[in-house]
Length: 49
Image 1 (cartoon, rainbow, N blue to C red):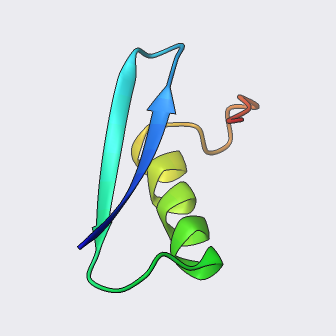
Image 2: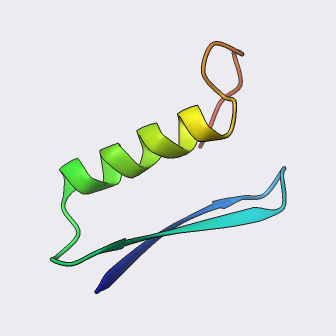
């Protein structure tokens, strides 16, 4: 398992994604998109850096 994490400092939360193979750019983009949608950033004008 290969972990990939996103730390949201403003929300004081950390989200960990696991992948059974190596982490690729495509996997990272999928994780960011999932995080963006799951945490209400879509359509709000908020920025995730």
